[in-house]
Length: 197
Image (cartoon, rainbow, N blue to C red):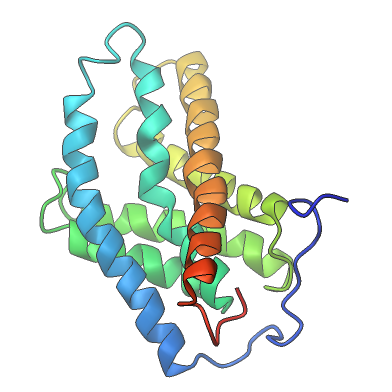
């Protein structure tokens, strides 16, 4: 069994284990950092409209960046609520620059809560690529439903299904593989001492 598919378990952190101060700080920092990144990503989203004019649904290939905190934060601290906490902080920070206004908070809630359901399903004990990918896809699904209802209700179902598939692919790339890459880099740098990841 390859390292990627080997279930990575957090036996020292049983379901419902208490948050430490360092966990709260790290998740908050991830949220704030990505809130700032989101401000730039909001502009990128607008600037790429012309680039994907040939096939507008393809623009959702970059959607996954908005979902990263929902996977990265819980992968590092492995605590219940980390996905939702990180996404809400990121959404709260990015609201100041977002063209979508207060709805950014609702979007962050949906994205974080959807990922949280996947981690809860495995009782916050399994942290392999399959679980990270499932959480990323769940977060993308939450975002997809939210956007369909609020922004694209008049778009035909076939196009919406294509958009959903592209969002899921983007989420796996940015969130699952991206989180693995970031955490492995941080491990090598020695900055994750004291964290189960």
